Length: 97
Image (cartoon, rainbow, N blue to C red; front, side):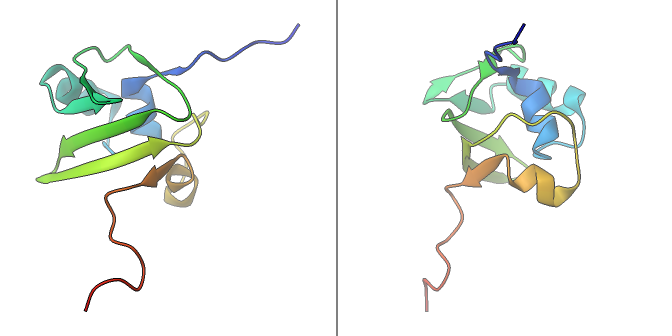
């Protein structure tokens, strides 16, 4: 039997990606209205995210635009966490003054 992965809970993914230190903090921010999924406000920590979804995260005094690349299986080291997403809000390398 093969299992098809439909997605991962948003709060869990945000924790795996190290956007928040704990799943509880991620859930609180989601419920507080600080997260958008594919441009739509999301207040449900259990909403499933999938590769290709675009998240807008307002946290830590900053707004970040992230594209989900992978779901991940655990909260791993920072290098593993960074492979789960592309930060579309980061300035381009070599751009600027």
